[in-house]
Amino acid sequence: MLAIFEEAVANPPAELRSPAAVADKTPKQLPEETLREFLSSNPTNSFAVKPSNSAFLAYATTSPLSFTQSLFCGYDDMYCMFMGSLNNLSGQMKQYGLAKNANEAMLVIEAYRTLRDRGPYPVDQVIRDFDGTFAFVLYDTKSPTVFIALGADGALKLYWGIGGDGSVVISDDKQVIKSACANSYAPFPPGCVFHSEGGLMSFEHPMNKMRAMPRVDSEGVMRGADFKVDMYARMNSIPRVGSEANWADWTH
Image (cartoon, rainbow, N blue to C red; front, side, top):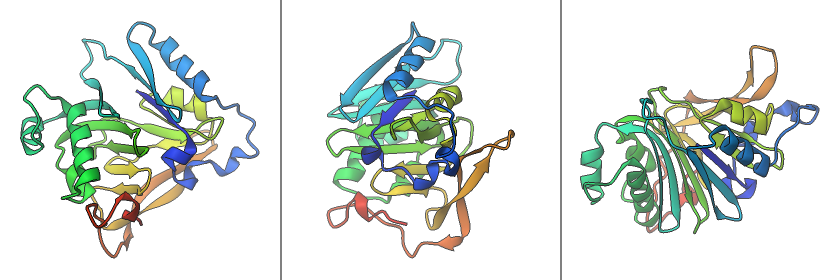
């Protein structure tokens, strides 16, 4: 999967941009170049959509021999790319009132819409209730809002970074991220969820703050930051969403 968002839409953590980026001469790609490279590397099984002037989404179907399911769904101006599978999909579909033929990408859209419109549960509980291996990127064009999560089991990888024009690039393909973002990229932390208005939080440890740690690769090059749960720094309360609070109140 590949998602590219304007910086103003995604509102990424400042630490994602490598401190060495100013002096670094490694070229970064513009969004169109990154998209073209992704599609050319998957010539027979990929497609791209531009749901707004602020975003590109590209998706490649998986091989029949692959053990990882990949899904794409667009509904009511919301788009979701999902990788993996949920062990409790049937129960989650019943909880959100979905039809029996619904899949995980549809479930994520419905769960997000429930949080956005009614907010009966804290976001960490909603994602923690997803039992399985998963990674997803959701884009709500109406807000506009970016919503990302990666399962806690670490079975799947997701990367994010800052592209040549300041855009936020997200992909499960590390080489795509490196080409697009040069040194300003990092692994997306497992067990975490990101919302463009609320920021990054751990859904396993929602009472703890996230801390950015400078990340140096095996070649000694500084590449953005690793985001870790700070087990010694706690928040006063878990922000919730609903009629009296919105995503913007999800602060750290």
